[in-house]
Length: 341
Ligand SMILES: O=C(O)CCC(=O)C(=O)O
Ligand SMILES: [Fe+2]
Image: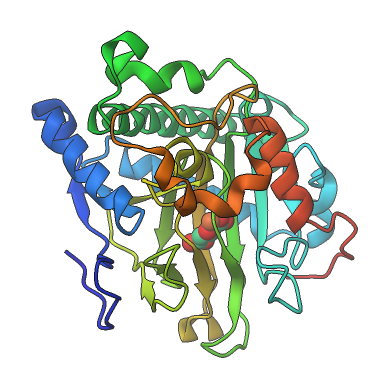
């Protein structure tokens, strides 16, 4: 267990557990119990023995470094737009528009499921290398499979009735072949002068079902232990080799009336970035565009719990695809002038 060195309000468990995901095969009920416990508390958990080959993850970080090392004009050949695919330059995204004066000090390249075979998107990212492009596709599908298993844990833990699909409840909400906002995102926080109080990515929640995050070498991610206690301290989410960090995102918070926590997080400046760039890879899993965000069938959630998810009330009537568009419009400036990173 990782413990933070600060005190959270009573009732808020602020540790980020490491769960051995080989339990999913040997003891799914226990695996589901651990996943659900973390998701009801801090909303983040690390998975070890997650089944995504580590050498493939390393190759993806190498491909990412190679892509971002190019001049900005080359990277900008496939610019991001409302389709959420392509290159997002420094400062073009502002994850916390209420508090940030400048946009996030990061650049990113996004792929959607349909774009992994396209020359104009994955082809640019892999710099025309077909083998890397193929591996990016395999990697994306591997993360999708892992996500399906994590979702199965939610359905088991939430005791979804057999009549509603039981442990397979979330499968029909996340069909690979269906249109969805699911996005694979390569992130680069360039080496730069800064101070430890500077957010490189503003505080935010993620917009989909869950996010799978891989960090490399340089820490910086911080997590707020509670949605409902606004003053709780930020807890570091360090790099733990050979793990994938999972967090609950907004769909699951809405589906469970706040029983599962879509936790605030941010990326802060790390003094190691005077000399080194920080890289991370995030896979944002989203429900099929036409899925509603209404509470799901489980005996564990009640109407009284709606207060926990109240900040999303204005989005309750949206489906998953509309919700993504609503959130992206709040955080993106697609006309941000390009600057060299
Ligand atoms: O780079 C990271 O470690 C986290 C990024 C993140 O939270 C996001 O892009 O939503
Ligand atoms: Fe995030």
